[in-house]
Amino acid sequence: MIGGASALIAGKALAQGFAAGAPVVLGQVQLSFYAVTGAVVHEVLERLGHTVEVRQAPHEQMFPWLAEGQIDLMAAAWLPEGHGAYWARYGADAVEVTKLYDGARFFWATPAYVPESDVATIADLAKPAVTERMAKRIQGIGPGATISVVSQKAVTDYGLGTLGYEFRTGSPADWTGALDAALAEKRWIVFPT
Image 1 (cartoon, rainbow, N blue to C red):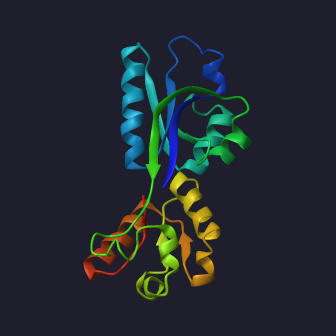
Image 2 (cartoon, rainbow, N blue to C red; image 1 turned 90 degrees about the vertical axis):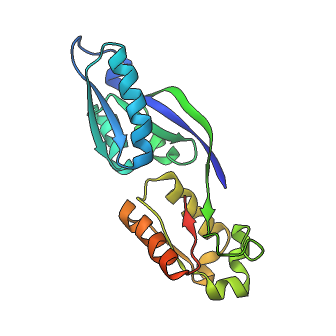
Image 3 (cartoon, helix red, strand yellow; image 1 turned 135 degrees about the horizontal axis):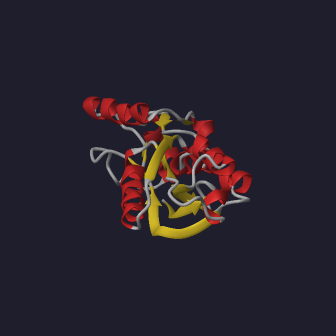
């Protein structure tokens, strides 16, 4: 389990002010859980009298857009862990406006039919009896997602690659599809969430 905080980030154009009447361009990552945060920020901006234009893209595109001034605000960035590398590369002219929420957790989960007595921690994936039954592919979402970043690190830190485990990035459909298929067949699987 990894903790994190989500932040609202302002690009250079917004931090320096922008033309009256110009829309605020809000960048939002194309995953459902970002849509909620983006909708709240959108609503607040509109209540403050701004016209808002929303641009959606994966994590790895959102940060360059911020640096290039193609978006004024980005909701949300997981700092410092998840998006720290993007922030270091593209955040020089950006400002963290506020934390949107703190204390979020990222997990690797297993289905309820996998006994907790067998798998309660990441280290348990190395048990011979677990290694024999557990699917070796750990399917994630995009490479810029916080859960993908921390999952890659966990595979390395726990030596899971030497046991045949691999973390793969993919689309949200790949991510949920892997879970749905495993659940339908009652296969043991690790699901990053």
